[in-house]
Image 1 (cartoon, rainbow over the protein chains, first blue to last red):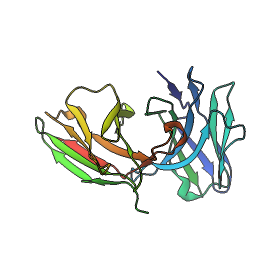
Image 2 (cartoon, chains in turn cyan, purple):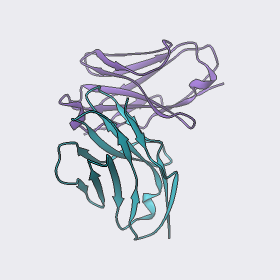
Image 3 (cartoon, chains in turn purple, yellow):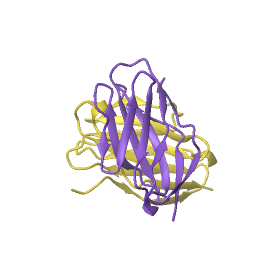
Image 4 (cartoon, one colour):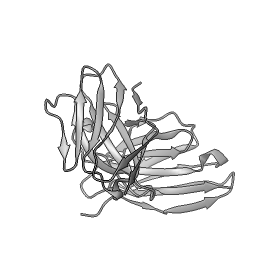
Length: 113
Length: 115
């Protein structure tokens, strides 16, 4: 079974600064995908970014980028130029050929003005 | 394009009752997954359906069941509710190609409270 680890329960970041959220995973699969989701207090899970195991370039989506280090089995999310609306819980998730996502425990991000 | 919809959004039940939650995926999406989110256990996978077939099931008791209809809409049922079933139940849908290469789009969730 895959294990996803997010070691930072909570983080504070100043508005307009960048923040890095850590995610490591443990798998023996060769083909897999890594996902990051944002969950505001409303509860809905918002898809942010995806990285495939065979993708050679790090994924980017606007202010979000994924620092993928396959050999280290890490997939850290970088949020640049933080905004107050970025305050939320962030989840790293792993998907493989078993038709499910395995989630980490999440990191709460609080953006300070 | 409309997103994933879940009904009802909030539900209050008592122990021993049963409940049915509904999920309508994004148009064209044929894979539907269900997850349970609790403060203690986090996000846990319940089951996944594709073309009316359950392809995977999480480690939950038999009181939790689901099904998918020919129009890809899905329902999950929890019988004999327990206090520990209080949770946010999230449904996600994705396109029918390779699972690992498709984003899972989540609905707003159904918040179930068992008294």
